[in-house]
Image (cartoon, rainbow, N blue to C red; front, side, top):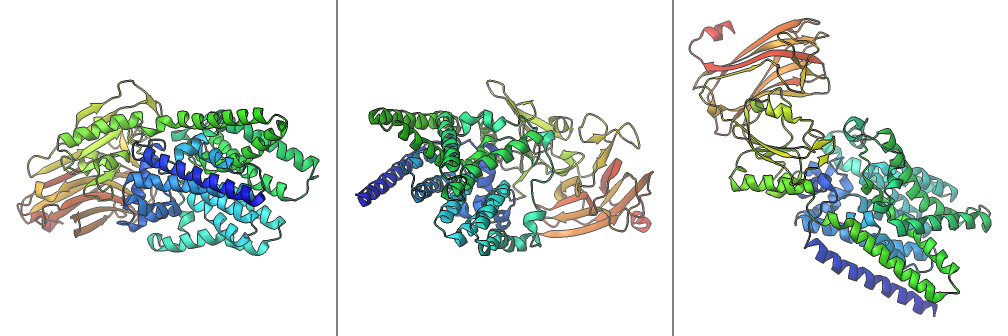
Length: 634
């Protein structure tokens, strides 16, 4: 009889998972997904182009294990990438059932519904985000632990930080569990994931320790992302667990704690390890994210989706609550069945209704789509595209890593128009532009080398991160006229990058901070300037609070094509810059004729040693070379 029940339950689980898979395929291929916002498209971008540019597979922000595993699916497009997460989520639900059965929970099949229809998890399954894969490794690790497969459990744990960095806070719980079980010999295997991924990415970063040195979450970005209530995630229970699962979770937690005290008398038995590694993991993760959001640490944005990394454990705990409810109503079986059906319907309907807005374009995507359509309709995509939202290259279908074709963000330059090719398009959006892109709209509006070609606004105004009214601006670089060129940068006017701390002339200058490695002054196509023989002169004023040594700061002139470098010359500033005073510099260079139609000349500062300094009154001239006198003076 017991064997028949097991087979029956196994059949129910597999049939349920198959039904969910069929439904998910229909959903994926008939909807878009916007639940992950811009991150959804950034993860896809890394995975889609990782085979052409292998370093992308080891992008720290993208999470190497996730990017590598999803990359084969991403080659077939966004829908297949979404299917990766669907299958991963359903497999996680399957392993959760196996874990529930191992723990001898009644109604263990019900955990499949609880896992899949947890609201935040349901939405994440149809996105290209890391949380679902993290939950899979986590559930596998705990199931293997209870199966006494300690080696493989430790290996699964080791990959958690390679999928979600913050899972490092969960390692003490696993260390405690392994220690109390006296399985010390397997603890070194907690380093497996780190060692394998570090070794695999060593080539790209020239360091074995790149997972530490390239950490993208150093410091605080509270100034951009803000911070909030310590109870932020608790206050969003409806969107994370949903009220029915949350209620069952707290009931299951309370009953399990009570039984551990009343029946087990605090023994280190299976119930203890359940409390430690199931609800304990969920609550630890919740506490960690609540704290960093409250303190504005770790670049936290307070996104509730991060909790999807651990919600299967809330579902398992909720199953314990569901079973206790059955115990209470054991004399009223019909009532229990009615209540159980109502709860199941409530859970499914809640997840679908809460997540339904994630199955269509977001408000920001609707506006961006209009901007992209305008670019296509007016044949503007033939020009280089600068963008801030990764939805743009996805929508345009262009290679976002072909620098001659497109670029995320704009060059670090006092004057943007002087550092981008003629007719280039800048797609500035009010979310990513001023925040992640660090580019205020006023900087582009006040650049006389740019023109606004179109502005897109939503039908119903709304604000985004930073309190900005959402809008999308299309700028275009005005083409240069004439062969001679004269560019003068006085750094006056309304530009948020200008500094009023000190100035050579006027009231403002440009401050180059120690963390700015490159500062572009000019990017121009060589076919648009000069004659067969022209002279480049770069001059200006520099102020530093300490003397430079050798190659601390260099002025660089380079000439390069799409695939070739034609010329490279550096000019040192150590002999020119004198501490605590404005110092004049000037360099001349005779220019040879262009070697290719796509040849660009770039003029920029290279701050090799991270020095801080100010520049002012910068002039760049290209004139016809008419005599040998300049060469003799040089």
